[in-house]
Length: 211
Image (cartoon, rainbow, N blue to C red; front, top):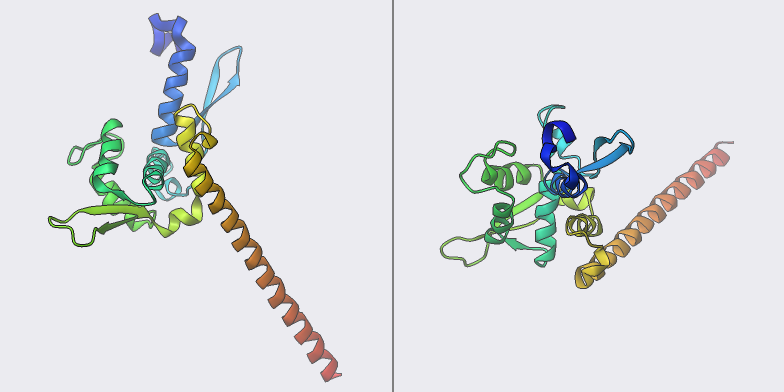
């Protein structure tokens, strides 16, 4: 890396690596891990739980979960609903423009309004009573299953070299979401245990009656 990429900027290696790592995480969801500090050997690790990349067209597909997490983050921080204009403002900063083919993501509008919607990661709906028609994005059902508001907030915070608690209002909402999910899991386990217990008692009763 020092020889082939950075060359004359060797003294700024750590700063360049830090910024490059942040961009890799934001766009691709890849984390740069140092394997050997003496020989400066690094590996890229897909750190996100979303299975979107696993469904892509093959093992050579470049990860897109970072972009998806960024969009989910914008939606969350805009009150769980973001206008198409708000989404494009962020995508433009990342170098993605409507109607302009991207060498990694292809045509961005198709990606966010067709592909990610088809995979149920995003919902793309016309805003009521909008004339001319305006559209908004929300989390799709699959996004709720595969990630959480806290994980998305952690992702956004790390990009900005911060911590989730620094975003107080969103952090409180993410904590509440975690609590609600925990309660739902506990209730589901209780229902399963009750059903299993009832079936067990029914089998024992049936066995006793047969005898």
